[in-house]
Image (tube, rainbow, N blue to C red; front, side, top):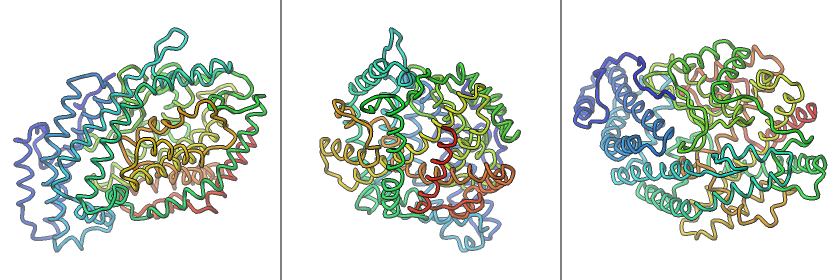
Length: 572
């Protein structure tokens, strides 16, 4: 693994190239200079915005590399110390200055003449001013440090199967074993290990939720959910819209999953469909093996993207040349996967935990979609314009999952394996929509019910989970495992309320894929046109540019679900 921040970055015009972002003594004079600069014209304001953006980008990249290093090796004390220094010492000192900058921008008489492209950003600035409280700086720093504990706890979770010690991510491959007793053994081993940390994670979550609610109250909100809707600049929908979405998913998708699972139970020839029966191939074939190791995964992904658009493949080649990948699962590595944009370098970093499964292929092309988005936004002049909301970012990644599916023979040269992979993708797509609704509904309940007990939390989770799960799946005898099922979702611990976006973007991605199957050239033109807009237009306008709708109504969900169901039937 090569994790270096020494690559050539964008030329700085304001800051010295050797500025030490770990030193407040070096940083503070630049904040003071920006805060005290007079702005007597539109030109002055625009120049000041570029310089402020340069400072924020430098700090953003420093934070990015620190986070990347600490997630690649959660046991490295030096990396942990560096990350802690940034979030506990540097960020809290920067926060009041950035608040001054927001006020300076918002109060300038020339702000009304700034390009329309900054309209969404300026609305976000007003939001940030509204929720900023100096007394929250220290609390938010504590929350940042606590979030890292989840990665550390999860990164240390190892299990032993068939005499081999492995990460839980790798152990999940055992759930694809045609031998049903072996699948049950895998299921029990995974959840026994996770159960060992259940109380520890409950303790961590109790602390996190208390501090988050404190932040919300100090900012004038009744609960953290309402605070986050403002903090995330959700201009296009409300909490009530989320509840409407939950209802639509329960009404339209759960019955579809029930149909699929009835058929799965029949094909497996079992009396009851159990949680460890959902990933195995129904014809009794062993798990798909799409690649051998991270290097092979990357090579094949580049070939796959070459077929979609050669430019996309060139983006990943640039990242590989710069060492911006860490793909293989290993002990001491944080869970999950991400594409981390680098504000100054302009070339993102992809992190994931590949263990040789089909799910890894999906994760890789998903993160590649984010990376493509980063490159497409690079021509935009400032970092705020290159940071659109998650509903747009996840459209980029989830659409790429489905677009590349048309070229997955790179991973699966055997036609039967290719068909299996595509069916699995579409099956997981529907289940993901239901899972997202589950996690989102749970988070709403968590922060609306501040003084709940752990027992109430477990029972409520179980009730919500049952609402969105296929009723065909039988958990009898293993209910206790389901009570803690929420603890596997890192977003609940690390990025609260960043999850409903996956479902909204998934609907958009299905629509993009439907367009791609009809007219690939036009669909890609629209996809690129939309993503190139970055944060210069509303979510609805970006989706419209992509040739689709930002819509999560019952009718739209029904239409897209029928399309996916038809595609599954054509493959079956």
